[in-house]
Length: 264
Image (cartoon, rainbow, N blue to C red; front, side, top):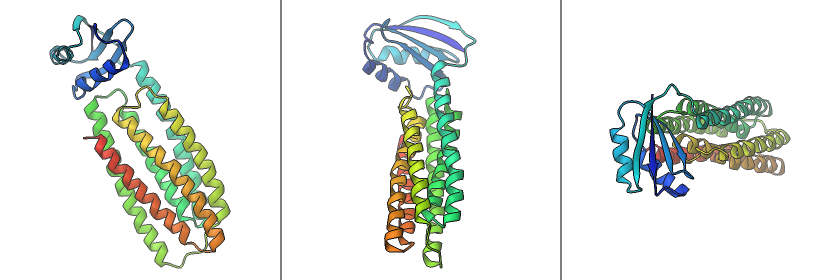
């Protein structure tokens, strides 16, 4: 690993930082970018030669000039460690609620809870995949975002099949009180996850954006299951539960396509 320091005289606010990040996107040899805006310094941790990186920095016409290049043993970065802590936290929360919602969904005969539990499981896999992306190249992160998108589409198709099976089958009325109580707790958990992810300084990277899209969808889904539980009780029908199950998987597909756009 090499460490190259650039002086960038016209870098005096975050907009220049974002411009530099976009310019350096796709250079696979870059491991980490460390910006020191007050001192107008950029430290690039990279493998191989610096020529391509230096050329890209100069082309921005921000007064970029290479100061030094030296070897370094540093392979872990504070920003990456923060990402890992955040992702481990939301992974644990989502996997715990997958178990809770799947168990209560089966017991209460609620397709809405079962669907939401599978969505939680998908999120857990996505966060796990994102952990492998931390510290990787931009290209690697976009590939992982693409994998996450296709995973969600596959899960949604399986969900639609199950909804159809239950719609045409002879299913018992779901336990509306379990649907409402569990979904309220899941809503709180997803709100916490979204707050944790938005605290990340790297929230604009493809794999982190993917994680936030999943969690934002979950908040909407939890509210939908609560409403479906109220309608099941009011109408004495399982149809609202099946409808919310259908909507859940439609949202999953919508989120998947948004993620696939990020991976381009």
